[in-house]
Amino acid sequence: MTLNVLTSAGPVARSLRIVTSAPNAFLALPVPNPYYPEVSCAGIGGGYPEYLPVARNADGLLNSCDQPAPAGSEVTLFLNGISPGAHTVTLENPGPVVVAGFDPDMFGLWKLRVRVSTSDVFAVIQPLIDGTPLRESGLALFFRN
Image (tube, rainbow, N blue to C red; front, side):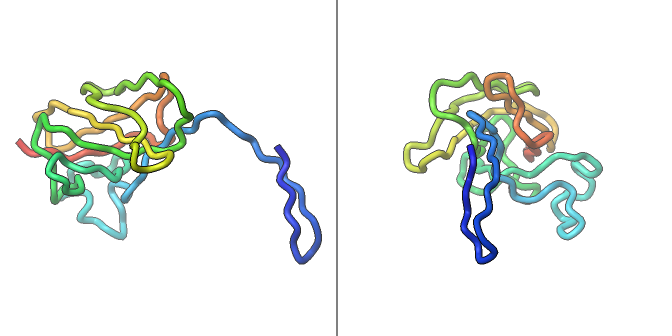
């Protein structure tokens, strides 16, 4: 597809590549973040290239090291860049996908509810949409026992 733009310097044409799907998560902050060292939770997750997604615990609070989800509870993540239609959603790391699909209240927004059974306080998940990983290398979630 070609995009034609009229600028003050004259017309400019640029080629655009259109893909049917480019799934990715809404992110809060990378872990660890030099500007927000508290995100690493005193070493939990430190040194890993994971990302902190915008995720809600079952109680509605944002999942973070300060607000971890109870182990075995559901955490809801938000994704975009997924084409309409039926998709297969799995997790590369252990944990069942509870619900996946478009949020009926938000155009183009996917909600992905996962339950990660873990005894650890830090888990990294990698959702696969039709076998394709998200753009992010891994998503960090925090839990408490």
